[in-house]
Structures are given as C-alpha cells and as structure tokens.
Image 1 (cartoon, one colour):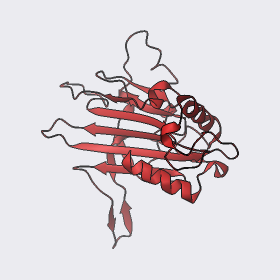
Image 2: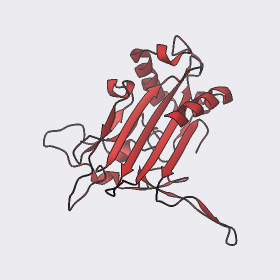
Image 3: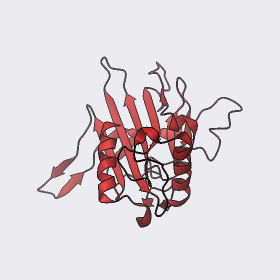
Length: 231
C-alpha cells in the first residue's frame, strides 16, 4: 500500500501470503471480503468478492443508478466513498464519507440468505467511518472502511477486509482539538469533503495515491495506525 494508508486482511479458512523460495515467486493472498476486478487495487490483496452482482435495486431507487457503482468508489477509498451493502437485500451502493451515516459510524448487515442465485451482499457487514484519531494534529483525519463476509457454515467462516487512509490538510487546522471525542459532525463532514476534492492523485482509480502534501507525518501516521488496528 502507498504511504498514508493502513490496509489489513484477516481471512479465516482462506489462503495467506506464501513464498516459493526456489522459484522466487510470491503468491498474493485472496480476500473474500474485498471487491474483485480490474477496477480495484489488487497489488497487495486479491479481492474475490463480485461487488458488481449486488446492484439489483427496487424500481425507482436512485442511489444505485450510475455513477453509484462499485467501480466509482473503489475499496482504496480514493473516491471519498465506500461500496456498502444496503442491509437485508441484494442491493449495493456507494456511500459518501461526508454524510451523517458515516459520521455516526453506521453499520449495515445483510443476512446470509438461502437462495439459488446468491449475491455478493449476502452475509456481508459493512462499516464506513470518518474520524479524527485521538492525539493526532488538528489538521489530521482518517477515512476508514471495514467489510466482513461470512459463509453459511456453523459456526460461520468470515473474511475481513479493512482499509484506513490517514490524511492531513497541508495548511489549515480542521479540528478544534486533538481529542477525538471533541470532533464535531460538521468538522468531520467538512474534512471528508476536502479530502475527496483535494487529497488524491488519480482519485477513483486502482492506482490512486494520496498527494505528498496531504500525507500524514510519521508521528500522526503512527497514531492513526494504532487507531486502525482497533477499528
């Protein structure tokens, strides 16, 4: 992963990273909770979740309509949005980080359904968060996303995909305090909007990266990484 981000996979019952020393080959691990396809950054983890099959939506719904498709909000969060499952339905949609749901740390779970045509949202729990980790500078915030995909076994076997991007405004304080608990909803939404509009090179693509001037210092990145491990 590029500087400024924290990416983690935890897959129970799946492949882990293996190295064949004699052939000098590195086999990247698969992750069943990460979106698959060329629209995603697959350089560290290979996603096998077919997010595109979770786009059947009720007639008249606007949130699934183009451009609210998984390729428009890749799992690296560079589009300022995350691909969510909508709950007990086969629907998926892009959720913008500058919203009340993300600020409120909303979690959505789709039940594991018995179906002859299962979709990628079945058995999936998703959570997106914009936050100001406790102790980071007043210019610093994070965009964080976690997706858990569980199968139908008893007990279920689950794969976890998590990515947290640490971002700092180059010049201006965005939060009134270094304390996480004092970050307001307005501050968090404003930060998410600024990050979406300014923080990325090639935003919304598999090769997106945080601009050098928007990357967190080593000190703030270390605090954000600790926050990410607990998220």
